[in-house]
Amino acid sequence: MAGEKTVNIASHLPAMAKIKPHMPAVVFPEGRDSAGRISYTHLTLKQLNDRSDTIAHGLHETGIERGTRAVLMVKPSLDFFALTFAIFKIGAVPVMIDPGIGLASLGQGIAEAEPKAFIGIPKAHTARLLLGWGRKSVKITVTVGRRLCWGGYTLRDIIERGASKGPFEMAETKAADVAAILFTSGSTGASKGAIYTHGIFDAQVRFIRDIYGIEPGEMDLASFPLFALFGPALGMTAIIPDMDATRPAFADPVKLFKSIEDFGATNMFASPALLNALGRYGEKHCVKIPSMKRVISAGAPARPDVLERFSRLLSGEAQIFTPYGATEALPVCNIGSREILSETGALTSEGRGACIGRTVPGITLKVIRISDEPIPAWSDDLVLPDGEIGELAVKGEIVTSGYYNRKEYTELAKIPDPGAGGFYHRMGDVGYRDESGRLWFCGRKSHRVALEGETLFTIPCEAVFNNHLKVFRTALVGVKQNGSTVPVICVELEKGVEQSEHGKIVEELKAMGAAKEHTAPIKTFLIHPGFPVDIRHNAKIFREKLAVWAARQLKQ
Image (cartoon, rainbow, N blue to C red):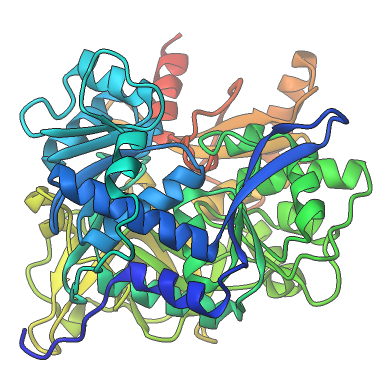
């Protein structure tokens, strides 16, 4: 469109490098010194900007150009940051797929993205060759590390090609130009590539900065790679912790608390699973983190007891924020632990749902009638009154417009708004708005259990049973029996609970359910050894898998 403003998400990096050239941009743990202390390496903002310029020159020489789709499968590292900003500077499109979605889904995602380039560590290239990923489309390969039999370029080759060429002339992309394809976790259905534009990324930077009051010079413990990329754009130092980012629940708390202490971290992103692990360790060992200004937790609802435990580690005005959103739209709503622990958490425990706060400025959210079919056009008649549970639909500049090469899913998820322009995105979640304007999350739409005459929603039901002191978490599923749906609560117990206690616990859970109107229909409880969860956050429960397991148990 003529006159449209130039927007390139990578432009934040040289702008910050000009203001604070010597501020560390990324800090990475390289190992340990002779005294056993963690040794770190880093890039300053200027060094990261210069290195990404060099890599951009080198990649461009290999044929990666504006609009080229490039799979990026590199672990969190200095190279990951430099490569990502280099690809953005070129105006190419990084395709980011979480390896945790499974090999079949990963291959399907790469096939849909039709990438011309594949940039990855040796393990990723080995899988590419063995499984045929991108066989029809990939023409350019770059190995980050040791290249074996597959040819192509190494990152060292790329750097040598781009050396001494000075600043890279950044692509003058527009707000509507595709910046990246980010694949969803696939925790509820097929993994799909959400189309991110430069305008969406730019809006997210503004939203995150303004909502949380993030200032240049802060230190961010970056436990989630994609969120970590916002660090340099916001003028924060991204401290990469010594952990497997794909398994946050199993991170070593000692290492993370040491990184926080070493750099005086002021900000941290932590999935609920990581928050739980750190809070339990911190409570046991009397850890305090006075430098922390805020913690941001997303990926799944964080239980009030998890928030309370971790909050005791913080000082002053610091609190935990639990923004609501998804790969397709983030952030949508926001709420802090202070409000949850003083008010809404108690209501969550009673079965009211999880309060996700109020919509952030610039976002419109509507609660509409629940449907599993496409909605061809927006109508205000879809909107439900306050207090009634329905689908959550959102509109705003951080909302993605569709899925790459997935027309049928785009039509199912988007509602065109011909009257006002634009579209609404159906979040795939259900919830309601209370009398004060706050939103309450009641679970995934696909996880609702429809009985004859009523519908049960996961979060309000599960919260009642999660109150049991020996229960770690529960999951509501529906099992078909003799033509009817039987509601079943799968139960994962706290560690150390003896099997001899299982019968007593089940009877206590039955009594807890019978005491609440909305959980009274649930009569069946099954103890599960350990729930299957998503790899990205280790928090989203794969209820579809549990439903299959429960059906088998009931047949025995």
